[in-house]
Image 1: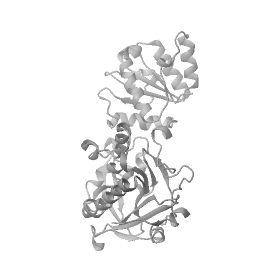
Image 2: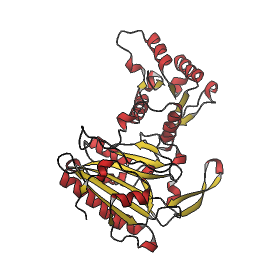
Image 3: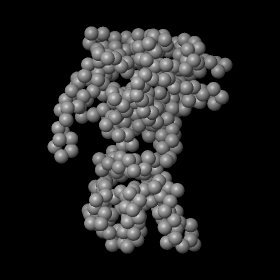
Image 4: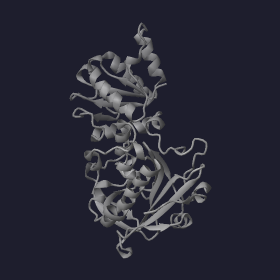
Length: 383
């Protein structure tokens, strides 16, 4: 069974391939007629694939609009209640299918950050969650140090959503629209530089509802920087395509948190450089970073204009502190650990030197509960 059956005219095969690659990169399995075995009767194969698929995605072009088979396949998708249309080459959706969701990719150049491409991914995810997501977004490797003794993730207080990316996992607080924490693997000997265009380009995760992600346009109105909980440079390691993908994932909004400029460019940057140095020294580290949520966190508000001119008051909280914890192998299967706290408010002198804290103190401040092996770890050399 495939996630998506792609319906298109054979004359549009090059356009179809670009769409297929987009979907594969984001974790969907795709059936298109290149999968028909040589010598097989194509009509029965098509009908069987349509019967097994979870959604039908139709590429409407002038050529596909003239195809009876494409209309037939679209009708089956409509009957399933799982039809999504893509407009290409200036084509319009045929009247019979105009009530179904459509995305216009006529001006799409292959960039997954193109607004209509993001809309396609969001719309498709609402119909059919990608079945291969763990393959393309494996998240934190808990067995990074030892296959025999995998670690566990800290428990949180309050609602949470787990989001997996390449080399790291985000545990989101959906109400705050900020992460409880980010957990990440770093292979120091395999780190790779991050292209400059990636480092400047925050974007929403197209597979996560916008309602659970901070509004990036609102953050630009505050005096706070859009800080990374884990730096793209830190997770950019491995084969070139994997390193670049991890860096791009680190520019998704679930990894953002509002930081005072002196923190983002001072104490937090100091900690990021320290942990990368540890990764080179120990070859492998596991890191955790997050904000400290407090009931009296200040709120930044601003009016935002939505679709069709609708205006709404949006907001986000300003954490008063951030924390970072690093684990390194300690020999004989043991661990070494160091944790730091950074102030993020003027009254606490933002940008001051990071404060080293114990694990129990960190748990008391954040409400997190770390597994026992973390508590048994020996102290790790600090800044």
